[in-house]
Image (tube, rainbow, N blue to C red):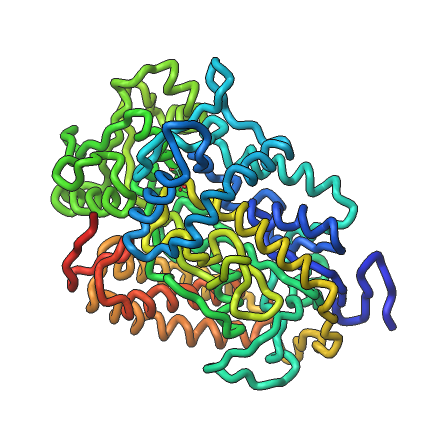
Length: 536
Ligand code: SIN
């Protein structure tokens, strides 16, 4: 028997629902896309925690955009390409940056507030690798301002249903119809997703004409990360299992300045904008060191600064370096960075009088689900945007504050493309319900937490800022055992988000290591002791 409740039908097993547009993830990429496609059909947003529990909410520095002369699109384009160390797709960089102004205006129209100077112009910060001040921000809480603004808009929209605490397990493809997919041609279509329902603990089937994967990054494959705990690479792993193309995963960006506070997870970010404001990196014994590595000093590209800090820590044997802001205007420092000031003060550090202890931490994955200029993945009817996507914008190293920008541009492009196609797509009703036959609830959380810690240790020790062929081989050898154990657990257990996350993190770690092994030169964020470097 099936009972209809809203768009759902409940059977004695699990629910099936039909939507025009399925959005997996509720950060800036998912929400801006949802607002646009909702004008053309029914939308369901699936998000694994609360709607605002996203990496977007954590973004401090801001959103890079060309606002006034002497800045120009061309300068921003060249900075992005130089940061990407020769691996950006120039066409994608050009279209993203030239379309930025319209997308920023849209955020402002939706209600996002960016700081202004007394003259009424937008206050623009500067971050590493930018030749001009061009980062729009809301104090040091830009992401939260944008996320809250978008959620307000989303909640007002009649066509949008939000499923919080729902966990997308896998995207639905021909594979679920029992059709063998040829690995080489990988001709695959997305029909929606299987989603774990927290109330029933059953797996529901959401059939969709068009699906956007916007699940963010995977920083939690490392021991130290600025990413929230939700960043477990779910979307990348799902699309990989569905045979979609995943690329550039070796380019993992470590943010040079996370607050050194070993017990805290995620690591608290000390925004690069504070170096743009004049903060200077110093060793444990208070000496400047960036002049040894790059003429742009503390504002060199992130890969260069992170490697420099890593090297200084290896030389000194200490656990952290310092960021010194003591020489800066106290009032202005506190006015522009109130969140950092309050956080450090809560730990007994007054940033206007004390140096801030900092270390690099995993921050952003430049690669991910390969998409074209319309955000289309290699899987039919499946789009991707945000950190989980690889659009070609970032190449081998992302320029600071380019990611929120990339998200709004590509979600816009993907929305237009999906809207133009949705009318010609039918639901795939032949997709069966999830089969939970023979699965038992695993009581042993220790199996999951311990495997996760082992994974993070492997990635941090062997696949971090500095790599080598030997370290990468050791990483893959160790990962194989974790993979086999996790698959075994997954196949036998009644599903929980923790089991699924572990499986996804192992899949993503595998992709990072494999693609790092395949990268035979030092480029941007991939640095191996076995190759020489030519970075400019
Ligand atoms: C920061 O504020 O330093 C982070 C900005 C970014 O990663 O784009």
